[in-house]
Length: 166
Ligand SMILES: CC(C)(COP(=O)(O)OP(=O)(O)OC[C@H]1O[C@@H](n2cnc3c(N)ncnc32)[C@H](O)[C@@H]1OP(=O)(O)O)[C@@H](O)C(=O)NCCC(=O)NCCS
Image 1: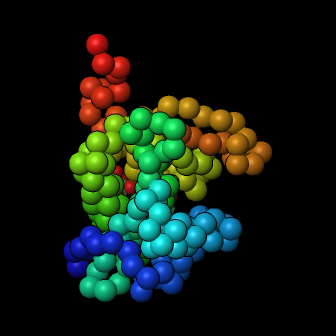
Image 2 (image 1 turned 45 degrees about the horizontal axis):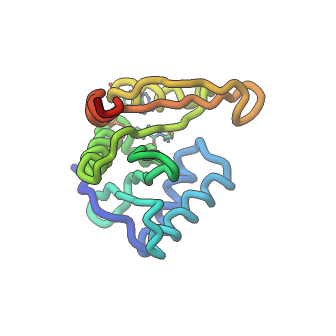
């Protein structure tokens, strides 16, 4: 079944929590953060924006992103999660493309993604690299000893907006 993309409302708060936990990568405190960001978003906080992928009424994936304070039109893609049973069927790609499309519409310039160096995140890193994201930096031991922070970025305007005006 092909998925459709819609906002994530209160009715899908519990499914979002279940989905995040089911990804099998995130600690309970991280799962709680995803739900907290949705609550902030539903309360009207523009710092966090959510887009869900649905099969019928079932939430099968979501993205969460927002503007980085103190930057000129740089955005963080905070969360991207797809139901393990639906992974590798294009849902993540549709979500990322839709987020990028929205960001370009909002004047977004750079999008930044933070992920981990652990082997469990190899598919995640491959996913971003094959969708045009460049590894910009690694911070050794950031999350824990042996668990490095890997920062990826994508210039949404192919270099044009990343440069200072002449
Ligand atoms: C990363 C993720 C969002 C990708 O979503 P998806 O719906 O599986 O992605 P798509 O079907 O659009 O693309 C599949 C591609 O992702 C990668 N990939 C995703 N899951 C994979 C898996 N279990 N095994 C191998 N490759 C995988 C591959 O690069 C794959 O192949 P392709 O580049 O030849 O197309 C999803 O795997 C996921 O939710 N992972 C767990 C949570 C996570 O790591 N989130 C990002 C946190 S920073």
